[in-house]
Length: 526
Ligand code: G4P
Figure 1 (cartoon, rainbow, N blue to C red):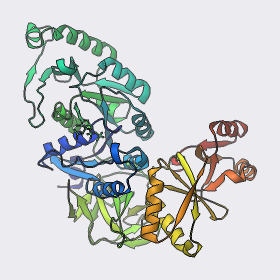
Figure 2 (figure 1 turned 90 degrees about the vertical axis):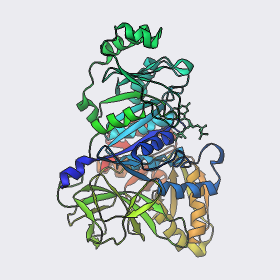
Figure 3 (figure 1 turned 60 degrees about the vertical axis):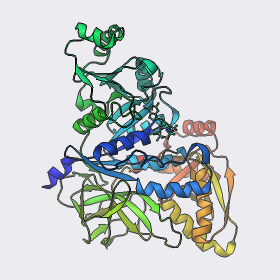
Figure 4 (figure 1 turned 120 degrees about the vertical axis):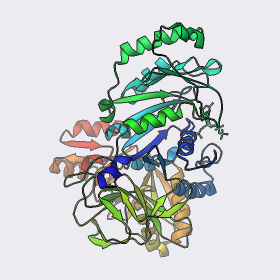
């Protein structure tokens, strides 16, 4: 198979959702279709939520499980599908944002009872920033959910994207009959069954035919009205609008009952983009280029504290990655080869000989990699688009054992390279602030500093509201920094960051400094 065929065969995507909407169940059903797992329940344990949110052993378990399920690869109808897993827990949201930089498209799962929830909005913001094509799957139609038109309105308003239904539910909850597939004019009848794939599909070329009344009785009238309204309001579906990230096709189904999943998967494979071109700081890189390039989007610490090695997840962007071939680590200006790179199966790892654009390669790392690092076949370029987002919680790191300062320094440096949290320094590094999305990370850091680096620390809460990266007039920034010295820190790449205490203070700073732009993500610079 030539390079282009290899690339066109691949679909690399992530399933995202608010916790409990059904991401795990859907992932599992996809894997069952792909034959990657044989039994339901194999992916199920991939979560820490509900009960044990601050139980450390649960965090450890999660870390272990999430390596195994970080990337799930399977083949279906001649296509090679890479599903990149994203953590369900909201405290790991930053991990999810980064994973979204490594995919070519996204399936968003919505609970039809709950509609668009808070975390969904945030995740979609990231997709919108990247113009990622999104397919929406409205799950749990076997429950008494919200009116489908209301759900679609809510999706458009809250997620700032146009939608286009591809299938339509016939009644709901206990009276749910099935879905009408708008794109091929057929009804897929529902049969609550967790293991069998429903096969009862009937074509209805003309919705006005009396056969429809026979089939779904009183619901026929409503379906005719709904479809007329859909055609009038949403217009035709244009796959290019989807590929540009402007319109999200919407499917209805039930992951638990394996209903509507095959249609979703097959339509996804038909329309979702294959690995796309990527922007580096030098130029746009095409996946078909013969020379290899890729970037690290995730780093995972080894579970065993006696072995400090880590796993770096590399997304291949162009050419062919090969085992034991020298590649150029751009940031370190160093050539490296990898003797045992691996690929991810649903529940195991396998040695990998070569990989193509869209694939994710696992690399054992002894501390050479940082998130965002680029490997090439010699070219000096760095991939763009691995943003840091403003953390939500800020604390100052206090060293509790002055004899172990070096260990603490090294530990915090490595943990933040892994992306566990963001590190901001002040006062030539003497003061360190840690920013995270959730409380859980502080527990993780404290535990790991102690157990892996033999360093003791404490965290003192600091009432900051947002971290803002600054661009604009250099003199204005210098002046502002002098004036707000106490609130100015540097991120890991030595960028100046303003830590604002409140929304009001931030707004005042914005108004009083028209020559400075304040950004709550670092994306602007890359
Ligand atoms: P998540 O990964 O997005 O957090 O969600 P997950 O798949 O774990 O699903 C959350 C809950 O919703 C699970 O129930 C799951 O069985 C249920 N669920 C998923 N899809 C459907 C569906 O189509 N219909 C209905 N009615 N329920 C669905 P749970 O009680 O939390 O877990 P479990 O005891 O079933 O494992």
